[in-house]
Image 1: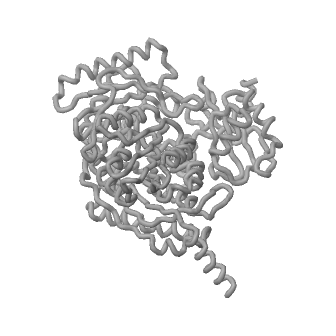
Image 2: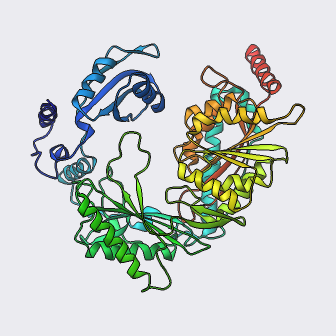
Length: 582
C-alpha cells in the first residue's frame, strides 16, 4: 500500500512536469531514493483559523494521539501540512481530523502532494528565465558577503547603522502596540532607546562556529561556510581563512579538518542526494584557556557499525597526531555527532565523546564557566561582560530581590546577578547545560542560585509560587524575570505564564533577533484577555550591545514594567473621554 501512495504522488506530479523522476535534477527525484521522507505521507489540514504551531502540535500529539513527524505552515493561518512516517498513520489522521471540530471550526483533512525539492525547483526556474532572456553570468556572493557583510565599513559607521535600524524597529513596534492597546500610548512616550554599546573586540570574537563540509565552485572539498541556503538554490561552500570575525583557532580547525576529509575514503555529505558522510564541524574556543573543542557531524544513515568505528578511529588518530605538529593550536576535546534525520521528540543530534576533556572553560566578569558541547554560551565573550552589566543595570535588583533566569543555559546570567540580589532561580531545557550551571555555581562559590532542568513554559508558574511561598510575612517581595530565549523568541505559553504571574513586576528581555522578538513584545503589551491574564508589560528602556561586529545583527535589551491598575484606568478614561467628544 505504501508503494501505491508513492506511485500516486509520482503520477500526480507527472501531470505538472515532463522530466524523468530518475534524473537527479528533477524536482521530485528525491522520492525515488532508498530513504525515508515524510513528504510521501503528508496531509493538508484546512479551516484552522488563526493558530500557533505549539497549540496545533498539542492537539495532534497529546489530545488526538497522532504520531506525526512535522508540521509545516507558511502563514499559521487557515491551513497546515502535517507529515507522518507511514501510510497507516497518514490515513488514521485523515479519518480523525476530517470533520473534527476545533476552536469552533470544522476541519478538513486530505492527502497532500509531496513538495518539490527547493534546490532543483530554483534551478529549474533559473533555467527557464535564462531561456527567456539573454544569458547573464551570475556572480555567486562571497563568504564575506554571506557572513560578515559590514566588514568593509568602518566600525563607527556599523554602529550608526545598527542604531538607526533599532530605532526604526522600536518605532514600528510602538505603532503596532498602540493599535491594539490604547493604554500603551502614555507609557510609550517615556520609552527611550539608549543606543548601541560597541564590542571591546571586533575581530576574531566568535567563540563558536559551525562549518559545513561541501565543495566549492571548482568541485574541491572545502570546510567552511555555505554561500546560500538550499531553498535559495545554493550548496556551494567557501573557505574561511580571510574572514575577520573568526579567531585563528577556528580557522585552524576548519583548515586541518578539510585536510582530513580530502584524504579520507569517506565522502562529504551531499544535500542534493543525501549521500556522503562528513557533514559539519562545530568548533568551540576559549579566549581565556585557549582550549579548542571539536564536534564532527557525520551523516550515518548510509553507514554500518564497522564504518562508524573506522571514522571515529580516523578522527582520534588524526587529531592525536596533530597535537604535536602545530604547537600554537591543539584539539583539547573531540566529539562525534550523529546528524542524520532526528527522531520524533529529539531536540538535538546525539553526541559521543572521543578523546580529551569533556568541557572547555571561559570567563565573564571574573566568573569561570564550564561549557559542555551543546550548551548555549554568548558568542562574543568580551562583549558578554558588557551585556550582563547592562542587563543588571536595567533590572535594578535590590538585596531582597529574586531573579527568575528563564533559558538560563550554563548559568552565566544567574551567576552575574547572584551578588546583586537575594537569590536566582533558573530553568533550562538542556539537562547537560543545567549540570554545567550547578557546577559553575559551586566552582565560583555561589550559594544563592538554584537551577531546574525542563521546559520554561512548564516551570515559570511553579518557580513564582516557590518564591512567594518562601517569602516570610511582612518581607518585601521583588520578583524580576530575565529572559534570553533562542532566536525564535518566547513561546506564547511562556508569555501567558509571565503575564499571569502578578508578582513579576519587571521583565528584562534579551534578544539576538529583535525583529522576531517584536512579536513577543506585542503579546506582552496586549490588553488582558482569556489567553493573556494579568496586566500588560510596557517597555521603559532599551539598549543594544554589538555582540556581532561586521554583521547586520545586534543584541537588544529591553526593560519592561508591569502596568499598575490606576495607570490603566487613567488611560482608559482618557480614551473613553476622547471618544465621547468626537
